[in-house]
Image 1 (tube, protein in one colour):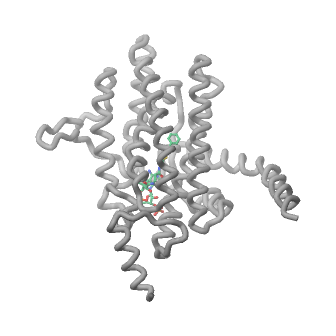
Image 2: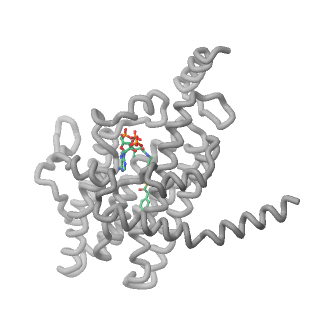
Image 3: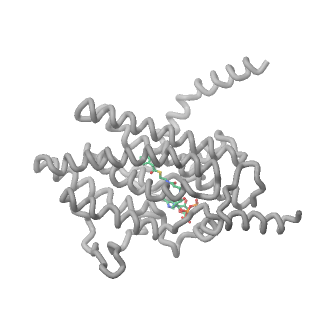
Length: 308
Ligand code: FAQ
């Protein structure tokens, strides 16, 4: 079969809703796009442990500490599932890690903001995990088998994270005046940044057309962002929290919440490495990597010993 015939056959399989597995023929570009997107997703889970990990020692009580510890541990697991799924595309995890450490691979913009108060931890669970679920529920139906399957369990855990985050936020919102102010301040600092997680608007998203044609993405960045807003605004109203957007209004005809303009200059500046915490996040990752060198060496020595 010629390369063109193979491509036609591949696209027909995608069209018919078939799942592509590691040993199946796939265009090089499909493989490259998956490696890019999946590795950036895995890196996001690992870097995403840092803003929350920062609060483990300061959780206000044992129940909250246990919840936060478990959540951060879950994020590590998510990173590892997705790295394993990415390895099925023929790329070594060490190489992916090097790409993160040398800055050639991205991770989600959202993790470049600081966690200034305890309320940030609840708001991250509610908004950041909430946004992640909206995106990942569809990735659980994407065309690549290992990515799709890794998403099923991840979505279940993210749902739990979102629920515990919303429970924390509603507790603080119904608490003292200071607690309510603290949670409102956290929402004010995380709302727009959560909307940015969905990526640039469709007209500025160079990868979307190809990813959608190959059913890696099933909905566009703007469609998913809108779904997140529609789901989240009513949740904010129930607990009397204001969304910091003066242009937010419900359109009865479309059934959607219309929202104001996202600050795309801020988004691109953070993506390019100039967000408030980019340098600290990468420094923390590099430090953890070099401190873990002895573990990698020991694992290699053990593997070599058992090879013979
Ligand atoms: N941040 O053409 P598009 C989580 C880049 S997991 C940084 O639209 P695409 C769990 C993009 O890479 C959160 N960069 O790109 C958790 C591309 O650059 P490139 C992560 C961004 O791939 C919760 C360029 O802009 N989730 O939160 C961002 O079609 C709590 C042009 O953009 C995933 O990764 C951004 N926000 O769509 C953990 C899900 N947006 O690579 C801890 C999987 C865009 O060409 C605590 N990924 N860029 O140099 C996706 O669904 C997609 O990759 C998008 C971007 C939607 C993120």
